[in-house]
Amino acid sequence: MKRRLGNIPDNWSWESSGEVIDVRDGTHDTPKYVSEGFPLVTSKNLKPQGIDFADVGFISKGDHVAISKRSHVDRGDILFAMIGTIGNPTIVDDDREFSIKNVALFKCTKGRVEPQFWYRMLGSPLVKMQLDDATRGGTQKFVSLKVLRNLQIPLPPLDEQKRIAGILDAADTLRTKRRESLAQLDILLQSTFLDMFGDPVINPMGWDVRELAEVVETGTIVTYGIVQAGDEYPGGIPYIRTGDLVEGEVQLEGLRHTDPEIAAKFERSRVCAGEIVMSIRATVGTTARVPSQLDGANLTQGTARISPGEDTVPSFLLSFIRSQGSQAWLRRQVKGATFREITLKRLRQMPIHVPPIDLQRRFATIVESIEQQKTSQRAHLDELDTLFVSLQSRAFRGDL
Image 1 (cartoon, rainbow, N blue to C red):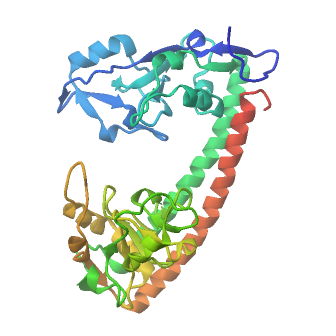
Image 2: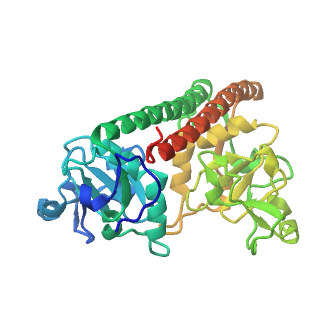
Image 3: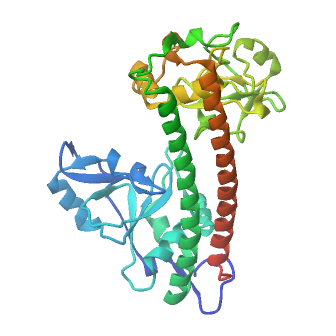
């Protein structure tokens, strides 16, 4: 008997996904990789915006043919990550030949489900709830093909499926355009920086060049934070970890706290609002400004404090570190394969250009204007995200 997950309209029916959709998976083995051949798409290659072919391995024609006998991928099929970050449904939109590994393949060939409807269904709270209940594994999460074949889905008539998919597509398009607008503002900022100061790699304007250690505030050093923060200390001093630096900002949700007595032993890494925090482990070079809410917070060993001095305006120094040339310099200094890091000694030697302070301040004014626009755009995107989640919830219970 089918498990009912809620009330649906009379002309809808509850169905198991495997009854109405052809559900397959790719290879679980690891074929031998070759320098040229057929792409092997894995879970990590499935992104919200589509398949990332820039980071795929290649397998021989023989291995591709063997895998394709069971799971040949066609235009219009839907792929779904089965391991790691479960999900990221992706519709195949071209005729490129490739194989799949640890990826589920949904083929809407039985005539009962519209591909775009199923794509939207896979991202719905209803499906996510079922997957959360059935996902297994410790460090490496995975979901079985059996689970994917037994998802309980509310199925409306085909014309209703098309209508629902159309509404969700339109709402998602608005979100995509807003994200593109935010990306364009970042590009504008990078372009403005290059126009005003030139490429840090070649220093075409001949600016004075100093080491990072020479441009920080007097009395401070470029340093990492707390070595052992201990267990979570409710109401204690928040500290910033590498994973808290996301998309150029410190994520306030999920911050951990340490005992004030422990934090007091690391006064040198106490951060003030407006200072720069940089990851020096794993995602080396990721940066963010310290928000006002974290004035007086601390860091861990994986992050470093950079306090701009009197000759560098924070907005300029942050943009300089984020520039392609500076990031390339940082990558060349990273040591280790599994455990990637840059030493404080090398970071302190990072070459920094020092243009006239008035020019830096003019740039800071432009940055402030762009950041205000980004804040407005993010607020609108948050509203669109909330709307989309609401539409999803209503769509699959027949309330649209």
